Image (cartoon, rainbow, N blue to C red; front, side, top):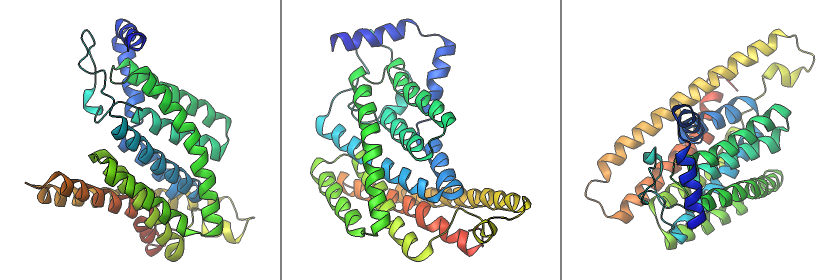
Length: 306
């Protein structure tokens, strides 16, 4: 770890309040609350198809990240003599590859690939680089963790989006079931709490997508726009109002489901074996993502918001 530790020690030597604030911001922007809000805005409000593809890429990429982490079991640099790691509460599990970096890379690569806007490219590249460097600056990952996470995030984003294109066009749900089986087998044999959580994310998305696509089929376009491409400008304002209401309904209902399941989980895992705890957490994340993908859209249809 010689040269890698040298890099971390150099970044530690240039720390100051401003840089620490900047790189903490980049780390925070890759964490669950921010990514949930951003994907919710895309999926519920801006472009349903782009949101589905982004979520599929994230769920698949994070499963692979957690699987590699728990298989390789690389220790973090935290605790290394002379190194002061910051924000260690965000550094859970093993080190290789970096989960924060791969999350940011997957999300922003997917967004850039799907929307192809110059301003999104600028923000995306900045966020991808910032997320990776922030994990080194904070001293919670080795440089190789970040480099590999960048590579995984870029390659897996494109692969999963192309795969989802085929699934969505052909309605071949057996591929989703097959992936669930593969990820489930890997989760069972590799193990680890974070891998069970990520498998729950993928299961929730796969089941939610199939249910939403078959029975709900909400749209991110306003009814007026779908029926009349020459609609007056006021209809766009009405559409924006519906989008804002969809986000409010979606995020509040998702938070309510998450808090309820947290309460249930806290009461179920008392004095339980590790395997049972992992299964409970898997089910929690499955239900949360299922709600975001299918439950919230069902509410949109019920309240005539989609």
